[in-house]
Every structure is written in structure tokens, then in C-alpha cells.
Length: 120
Ligand SMILES: [Zn+2]
Image 1 (cartoon, rainbow, N blue to C red):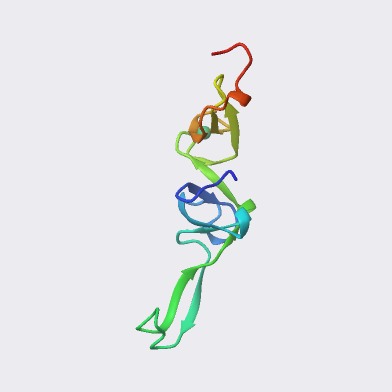
Image 2: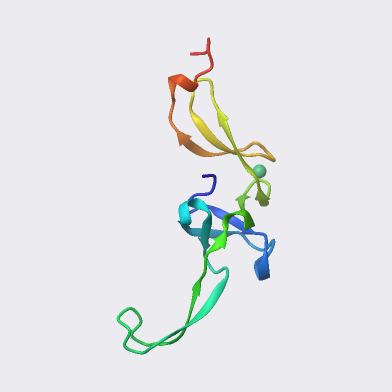
């Protein structure tokens, strides 16, 4: 899964399309949907005295967005980008920005089976 909780993403559909980067709050549905901070808010009418909302009334909360509608936000490119994977010679796996090839973060540590033969 290329998007992780806590990542900054750009939402490509709806009112927020192409807007400011926003934080992924949660990955849902086995990675098919994401909850993005402040995006796709819907009003939910909640009865007073509901245990989780003592004040009741209209509450706004985020609804899941399909993962295909968000792009990882690269701070070097200043835009939503596609994310790729790259293996280093020792077999470490990294996420990278496909546009500027900046390394976003380590996905999995050195793995001899992924290592480039001959490099050590
Ligand atoms: Zn980039």
C-alpha cells in the first residue's frame, strides 16, 4: 500500500480537488479507502445524550475517500505525485516520488533476497 496513515495527500476530486495538502487520518477497507482530515465532510445528525456526543445536533465528520482519488503530496514537487518503490543495493525498500525521485521513507529494511548480486 503506497499511502500510509499520517502521510500528506492531495485530494483530486470534489470541492477540495488540487487543494492544499491534507493529512491521512486512517486507511480503511484494506487500503481501498482513506479518511483525510477535513475532506468529504458530511453532517451527521446525532441525538442528544448519545454516549459519544453529549451535545448532540449536527456534527460534521470526514467520510472515506476512494484511495484512487488521492495522491501523495511531495513537499519537493509541491504537488500530488505518484509514489514508486526503489530497492537499494542491500535490498532495502524505499518509497520514492516518481516525479523528482526523492526518497519518502523506508518501507522495509535490508533484505538479502532483494539485494543486488555482487554489491555488498
Ligand atoms: Zn517529488
